[in-house]
Length: 260
Ligand SMILES: C[S@@+](CC[C@H](N)C(=O)[O-])C[C@H]1O[C@@H](n2cnc3c(N)ncnc32)[C@H](O)[C@@H]1O
Image (cartoon, rainbow, N blue to C red):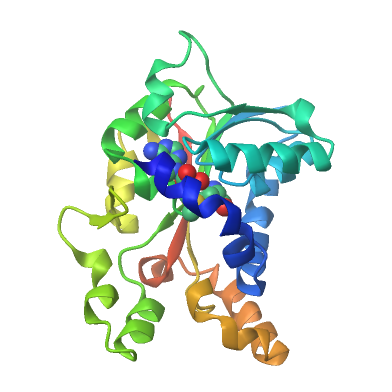
């Protein structure tokens, strides 16, 4: 079902998220980490590449990317973005779900794995995904995932102020939240760290979207460039606090593959 759910969103995803001021500010923070974590000439796996923003960014800086997504519409958009940026020779697109990683060709390994803006929240089983991904990484290979967190105060305030209580607490449902035929799970940073532990050492946890509001709550910032720059500065400053990772819309987890 996820392919259908995201097929419907593919045409508007960049307008409603990627190219909003908040979307850009948050992605810039992620990009500053990508530059630190992945190196030119590495070949990395991206899970849930969406419209290809990160794949194109990495490929333009010399990293080869196997960019995967089960939504054929998302892959189409990513493909045309790569052609326009003239970096398609460094991106191999595969229209597959992350659940298919275990069935890639025998012996196929990657120098790192990326997943941005909540794609791994769509995983049917995070524990299985982590084991499958670990099998595809060489020891020392980096992992960078941006995951939707469980406790998101901005979301609480936004929906409570509108009397939408069920939406305000949607991330707290035991067993995940049904959404367009899928179940979305919202692990805390501590839960994800413990799922990663058998295969990875977590090297960094940081908040994303702790000061800046989610894009659906950010239209007012378009009218206030001063507020936007102040909140962006504070968001960058908050990157230093791993504690805030438990209280943000998304969080960034960075880890390194342990030797088997
Ligand atoms: C919120 S979007 C994020 C897209 C992109 N990573 C970005 O940074 O803009 C989530 C993406 O996850 C993909 N997705 C959903 N279920 C998935 C699955 N089981 N395996 C891989 N990707 C999935 C969707 O098709 C969608 O493109």
